[in-house]
Length: 318
Image (cartoon, rainbow, N blue to C red; front, side, top):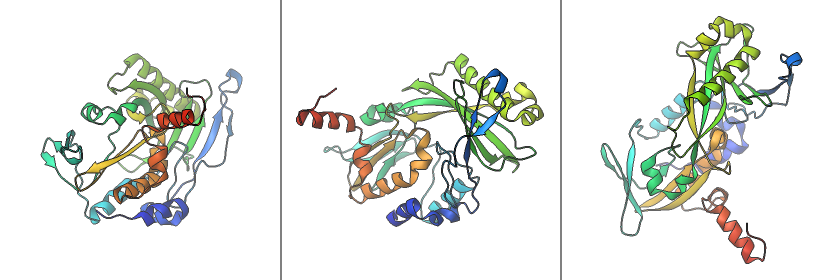
C-alpha cells in the first residue's frame, strides 16, 4: 500500500494538485427561489460560488460536476497496484484473542491484509452488529431526476434554495448521460430511514419526487416539456440513501489489526466529497500511527468525552 500524505495535504492548499483528475472545471453558484404566488418565477443570485478549485469543483453539499473524475481516480489506483472488487459484501470482521482484526470474511472467503479501511454507508446490518460506532450512522433518503440541458445550456452547477418547499435545497448538477449528451441532474429531499435504509414510506418518497418535479418545472420549463412533463420525468426518477449522523459530523475510529490498523470512517452526510481530502489525510495518518485532528474531532465517543471533561472541571454536564 502506498501512502501519499503530501498529495492529500496539497489538495487542501494547492488547487493545481488535483487538476490532472479533472482538467476542465466549472464554477457552481446559488439561486434563491421566491415561492410566493405572484413572484414564483423571480430568481435572484444568492451567493458567490460555493467552492472553486481549479481542476476540482464541488457545490455546497459536495456534489461535483466531474464526469470523468471517478474513472480517472480508479485508473490511477489500479495503476498503483490496487485491486478493485465490486459487489463483494463483508459479512464478518475476524479478530484474534486480543480483539485485533485478522481479516474480513466475504462470500469469496477470508481476505487478509495489513490494514483495513471500512466505510460502509448506511444499513450494513452485519457490520453494525460488530462495530458499535456504526450504530450512530442512519440513513437519509434523497431523490433526483434528469432532464436534457437545453438551449441555452446551463454551464455551471447550481445550489437552489426554496424556503418552505419540500425540496427546499436542491442541487442542479451539470453532467452527461450514457450517450454523452449534456444533462441536468436535479436532486433534493431529506427522508430519514433510521438504521435500516429499506424502511421507506412509498407515499412520502412520492411526495419528494413530486417536489423535485415541481422544481424542474419552475426552473427549467422547456426541458420539463421536452421530456414529456411529469410522466416523462417520472421515468428518470431515482433515489439513494445517504449515511448521516445526528450531529452532521462523520465518525472516525482507529483500532488495531494484527499487522497494522483497522480504520472506520463513515456517516459524512452529503458533504463526503468535500471532506474527502482531509479524510484521506486522516486515514493515511492512522495507517502510519500518526495523530490527526480528525481522530479526535470525529471520534465516536467525542460527546461523552467532552461532557466528562466538563464535569471534571466543575462545569455542567447535560
